Length: 262
Image: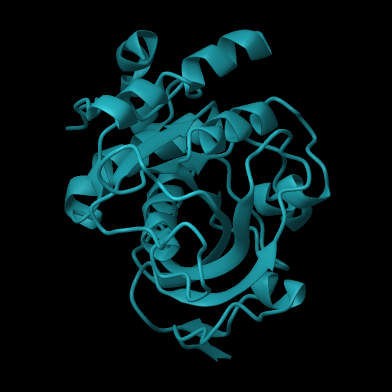
């Protein structure tokens, strides 16, 4: 599929966040303490896996300011890399990394600022391939960068998980939706707990959440959308969840009809 087609489909999330459309859900029969104090962690701290994890899913374990160097034409932003609490495929608490970006301009389009919950497609399984590193050191595939810029250009916040398995010494498991689905939802929770001063205002609990992703990201999005009501019922999820997931992989296999309408 061409990047133009991919970009056009991703922008369909705009209507859902603007109009509050109903979510299209596929049918499926060392101890780290969550108290960052401030976003003063080092780059190494973000990707160092803790010996054990306490706290609640969505709690921030570490964060640091950064810049989306390889996302072109984005508005003025405050951006953070974060490590946060989530759960793995067996429900155990683990740490994951990701990125939160919030435009500096105040949200003036009614209600609270919406958040794009973005799930990346596959860049590779090694720690250097995480989306948070891609956006700051250089994309392997520039398709994602214009989409992210377009989302941010609407004034929406960005909460983008790397997925589980991208901390140092770990291996990311391809389309492990039972882990990556919760990680996707938990970074939205984390985005609302950034302790730094935010020029345009902090994210509110009632802000709409648009979930989107392509390929493996679509698989993650489908899992996140399916789990949202039970795993993170406080999140106001409003958008179609997935764009062309890999075939016959868990819940995403049932989303083809939904994605064709997205």
